[in-house]
Length: 519
Image 1 (cartoon, one colour):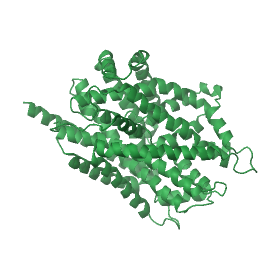
Image 2: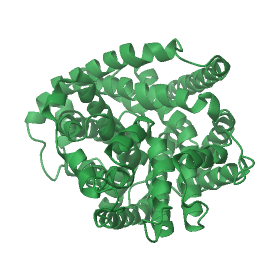
Image 3: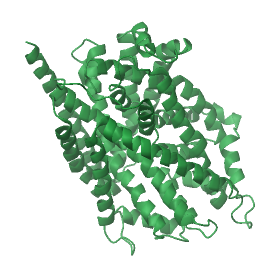
Image 4: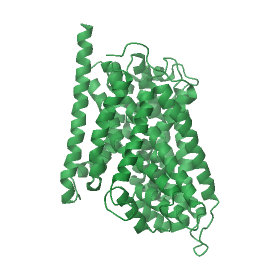
């Protein structure tokens, strides 16, 4: 049942844009993007990246804004209610439940990763690491996570304590509401994030060649690697798929968060220019700032070949191992301060995304069960705090990775394909087009009508099929999984199934209550 009284609304347009941009600007902009670029040919990666931004990213952004604002007219702030409105079928709400599953599952483990950035910002300013090697810094990270023990961290208590601080901050902001909590956070965190990122980018740009003994290890060569395309590499389909996947992650589409934020708009509030502004803000953070920090400075300190090797180890190796080594080096003056800024900007990027993940579930409990915000936020907090215990204590067994794959990777493209088909084909492309353009400060170019109706769903279908064959099926069958990890992988799957079942039952109960009241 929709909660009695007026639903919340955004206080200002700039607050809305910053909040949605904050949802999109996350750890992936500064950690995942440089790794993907380094793993996929540097400059060669940028060509399909921009193509898919045009054909996949911007269309999905507008589609989700359109679905969200339309659902908000009927007092629905989450995907089950929104899908029920655009498709008059009893199954619609259960397809929407996938959005709730994705957002809460990602929130469970994302909050813990986010707490690492807060911890490392403190470790940087306190000078807990200096003159580290890749081996010792890897040990520093793993001991902090509780995977191993060391003289610095003999238990997981510091990580656990910082997780609780991060958890409390997230839910305190959610408790304050849309305009007084999420919007205020965005107005503070997003400008600080950009200020820190710009200062870091300028400092790295002026580093030149840190060690004259290695003249090829320079910031200039790092930028050259990112921006000089090897056109021959474009024949590799994996580069195109990686670029499409990065667009997906970077804009935070396919998880129901943008829908939730857009549902608090007024019926005639612009979504065309606002959607374009948030997408552009995200791209500036990723392409201009994200590309100017991690990879160029890594090339300057480690060399191009070593940087590629580091990137092959994943986002955590680049962000939590290599960057601290650089900031702790004698060749990086004031490294403690810049390390503090680096990890704090990651924390700001993380928290603006994680509060967005909590909002769809809170909105669902408010709108469909009539809960007040305090009760809805408390209910979600208890569920997330209980589930994150498994992530923390079973991290070394692949528990987090399993959840991240199904909810944070494969699930995103499945949900995006469902919403695109429902909005552009079931609801109808003409009605969807009118809905998106209604009240717009500008009109969407007609070119995108055909892109959203035909091109975007085809790209999503290809992406889903490719990922299923290439990675989902091997992951499902647990290929190359260590025997000691298998029980924990099953544990992660059982937890995810339990979350999905509970959400489905809640959706069913909500609609039964609504139906009985209508009678």
